[in-house]
Image (cartoon, rainbow, N blue to C red; front, side):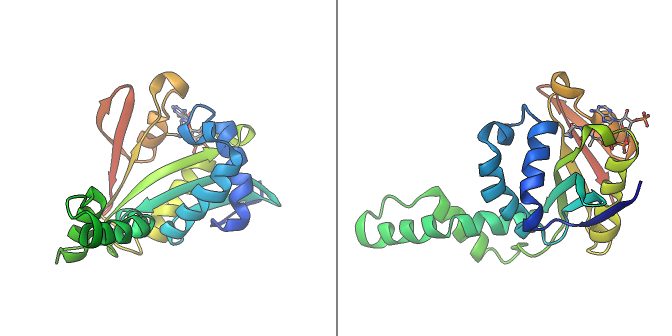
Length: 202
Ligand SMILES: CC(C)(COP(=O)(O)OP(=O)(O)OC[C@H]1O[C@@H](n2cnc3c(N)ncnc32)[C@H](O)[C@@H]1OP(=O)(O)O)[C@@H](O)C(=O)NCCC(=O)NCCS
């Protein structure tokens, strides 16, 4: 197989959305439709991810992808997404209804004023999505993507560790063993889903 891996880009979003629907048909996002995933979710995650999400091609065909996001990236996203709400609620709070100081305002203010704010510090990475085209499974492709993320992003950025929440066991086996094979340790299980963590630095 002539495989190549590259950071995810907006040109990949259509193929990613298709693969997500095929590989994880019961996932919440898949139910929302390809167009939604393409337009909204992948754009946002690849921006928040800053090069820690990857696609794998065989020649011109995209056969797998991995989307992850660091805690800082996600937080930035939350702050960004809530900017409008933030200003609206500040406006309301000061000029219209001081009592309606929303939770959004309070949480964004908290992050802004907190001296220990770690918005730019990628401490812990969440492996949000991984999917391999069915005909390419069990050939080491998924493992390759996980290693790419760890070697070419996490270790360079001194990331403390990577965590993942699997799907429910009864849907697809939950892929728990896949993560265990890739050196993740089982932290716990809840509602048929497993939480696994791979520590990278001391
Ligand atoms: C999970 C997935 C990404 C693994 O990719 P892959 O390229 O097939 O994995 P690799 O070839 O690197 O590793 C294969 C090993 O992982 C295990 N594995 C793969 N998928 C598994 C699953 N769903 N449940 C349990 N174990 C799994 C295999 O048993 C195999 O172990 P073996 O070598 O002892 O036989 C792929 O099966 C997939 O896309 N599944 C559908 C989407 C999905 O479930 N994503 C994970 C959401 S939490």
